[in-house]
Image (cartoon, rainbow, N blue to C red; front, side, top):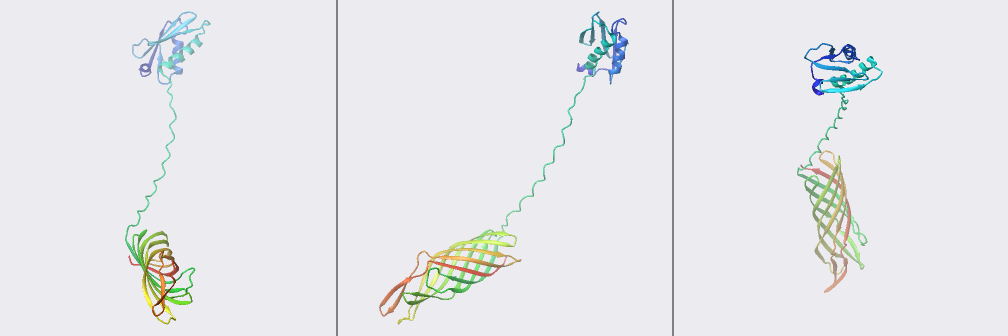
Length: 292
């Protein structure tokens, strides 16, 4: 069938002129139905041969190797020609069914721009601040002073080193006044989160505090220097304006092993009147400068 569809456009209808339908009737019907071929009644050898055979109550149509017998006892030649035309056209010019073209595929959304790489540049900051702290649940006065801190590392994490100079603190222990002068130092790790101008920081590290203890209003004036080890925890908030940032910070100094405070009340007479505080809570307000 495919070979017939690609044959030359001439279609030759052959058969007896007295047949029903006659070659002339079938040719007329075919030329009205064909879109690409032309039918005639010549006996030329090129093209496609269509044979009509009238067998009385039936007739046969042969197109090349394809043949079909139709039954029509009424012998209506026009009806026979129309029925034969449908059979012949389907063989020679079969319909071609094409599915509609699929809609164009939607364009994928543009890829998101890659996230900027994290800042890996080292930075150095220096902080200077006013300082105030005190010991909860201790019969002592508040202490004030100044603090200096150096921060070095990556913008997200780094090392922090600080020292505080504070005013003396007076304790009333067993009706004895004791003056405590402290010099806290600390070394720790700082984590930072930058939100545009705002920077939030958290510190954790080791604290060392030099304690100078002195008894007051005693018959024998005595003093001693002690060393305490503990922890420092702090939270800070900064607002950056270029390389300068004011900040506020809250910190806690924790010394799990307090030092016993012993005074000499008289010659060769020593009395333990208490211990140094375990926890010191303080606040700082100051300015940070970014060196690089």
